[in-house]
Length: 374
Image (cartoon, rainbow, N blue to C red; front, side):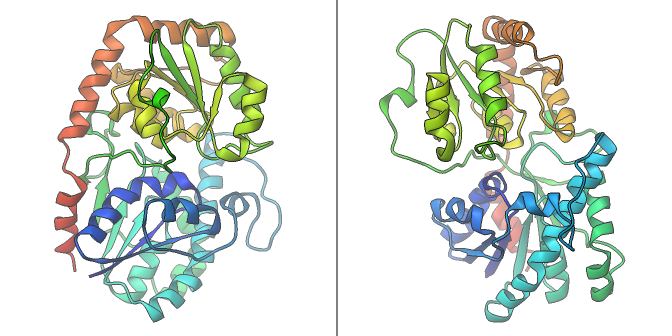
């Protein structure tokens, strides 16, 4: 079978799809991963065959409309949903023609799309093949779908569709205990942390003594974009009696190391997280799921409105604490981190959640369900 995987525009949208794509390839299926230029390295790093369908960075789809005019930054949660949904809608519209040309040369039997990769269901509908929707974190607000559908109205009309087609199968990697209560039924699949690898160094495998805290703001950090946020976050945690390591893209690693005076760089988080006593981060979906799988308590400081609900669920479960922007003063961050490090219940609940993830169906098992669609 030929299976086309369609990712979003950042490495964080590639990593969650990697386990299923790898399982499909290992089972003998032909697999191609459609991506953009800035995620091509993440696809290649996973050992998968990738084809870039766009040179446009993901942020450009959000910051400009189809005519190239600037789009105002969102002022509140409702505007944020419209902003994000329409941005992913514009990205989908831009991907459709290149995906169509790919399909003329290499017609897939099935299309798997990341959670907000709306070009996937449109391409599948055009080809008349099954479509699988694959979540990439603990949940995205339904309002994103609605806004994307408004943005994609011209494309939907040309295809004779009333709306974005529903998936033939939805694969969800969020553990049931922290899944949204109103989320539709889905096929669960174990979350397997994936990220770009590098040669391991002995210190990554475990600390010699004391406590270790890992701080990150995700894969999108760049010079002038969230790097100051990350520096400030490290400063707020820096007074803890603990070893501090900072996970950040390689492009900013040298600058951050100089500014922070701690180990900073692209870390194999799937390995390093297991040696940590605490993760402190921006509440990004992949980072949070990696912490859950590694049984590590987390301090979540959501830097986008959409990240608040999943953070609330994880904190409500008892494996994390959440501080909203404005609450994250140096004193409150340090106190929350110390609480997470010293109160046994957080580690116990994190271990229970990791056990729940480990018990979910493996990607190879779920592949068997996918195969039956075609």
